[in-house]
Length: 341
Image (cartoon, rainbow, N blue to C red; front, side, top):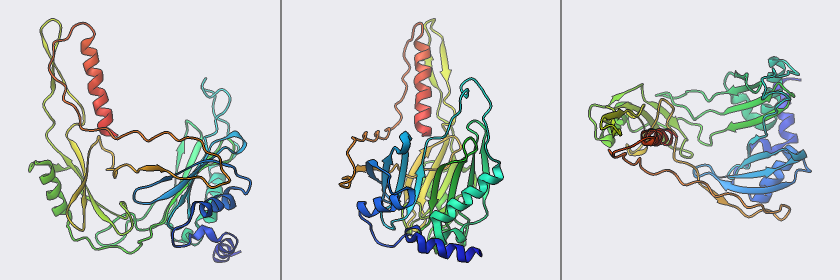
């Protein structure tokens, strides 16, 4: 059977795979989940998440194993699902992982699942790659979003990742992104102007780009366009700690001079600033608001999302005795971890 014929057949059997336009209700989203994941799936909890891309998240326990499924609220597309990664007896003691299939067989499973759930959008994916996780004996088959347009930017073409366990041959997770705005938007702010806006935001004219700015479309919602600017600034002075014997010790916080600034490429406004140790800038966290369950599901309370950490408190110079020095060093480490997150 030709690939085009196979795609057409899948769309006829599963029209929800291509995602009908227009908001869907929670019951319609649940129907999509059951048609895709199994008609007897019993959902025990649900949430509505996503500030920029609203979605329904359904939680279930088929055969006693956790399952989380997300459906795009606007398109009705099943966007992702996740199951626990299979373990094996003796893993904690270092027993080598068993394998029931080769990486090539896992890749065929991943391709079939991507085709099943993405439908006609599967043909728009770029070349696939794979990444092995020897600790859990899994393989990720992924199709990264391509850089397109002038200047080149990400976030315009579809992307997909399927994780397959070589321990039992099952799919651990599936995730996809199919942008609603697929035409490249011309930026009104150049890369150099974005760097200057980032410097002005930091009030540091000497900050230097750690790499060339990158352009991302649709990250903050359909039709948005942003520059990600990574600037290196002079690190802050070390924290001075007075030890019990009267001597002063300087505590240096690593990675404190690296900022990831997000600049709106249409207005020039700075919309994000985070210190990091070399990771990509991440947009503000998504909110999670409780959503009423459909009549077929029972309610299990969901934990409230943890509030975002505020500004980094200064560590004063104080006399310390005994183990006090260790406590201050530990506090400094916590500050670094929180800022990196």
